[in-house]
Length: 278
Image 1 (cartoon, rainbow, N blue to C red):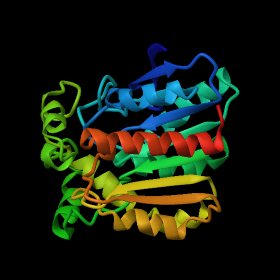
Image 2 (spheres, rainbow, N blue to C red):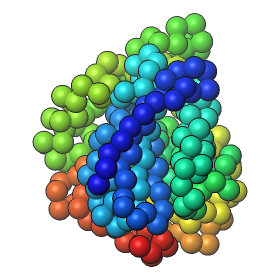
Image 3 (cartoon, rainbow, N blue to C red):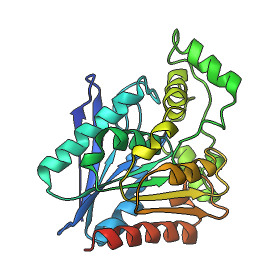
Image 4 (spheres, rainbow, N blue to C red):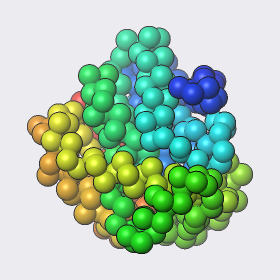
């Protein structure tokens, strides 16, 4: 397995970092869109498993995250993230004449759904893990406050992503807290405002999705309610769609207790193999 990385200029001149894990004889490409406050490197374990099944894997670091440039944690425009992802996927399509599956987690899931709604023809499948398709965890007064104040001070800190809510595995929580590429400061107000503004508009468009979809969520996710994935599953027009709610799992189903995350990785590989045989 060969690992490579690079950067490109995003739509407004921000340098965007990507990395890839290469298979010798790939049959498809999986592009990973990570969540709020983290980075693509945290998906290396999944990437290795997919490469072993002859899938090439790419992971983007969204602007303001990981090794990409921009104010830490700042998403000034939700559309910029979709456009960044579009640039990377166009690059992949130019270099590899292979089916492309997009896998999005949490905020990256909301970005992935937004991308699919705008560029569905570029994808062969959409996989989602704890996709942030609901802002119910943010109470209405805070939503309104973020929307108003972020207009004047977009980078004003709001709140941290609580590491103890991402996984039941204490070692994962510790690693999350100590990872220098994760967001250690509070999330900028504008990021929250943008997510609230865009995510609340997505459900009205779900029926436009016809891609093969694998929707995954932890039943005990305290950051994004599993009910939001159930709504997505019911509303999309995809004929080939699967919803899997993992009992007791927290937000990061791919970083749960060892046996549990191994099951999720296995499920993803099996789902891919059924549609893109190696």
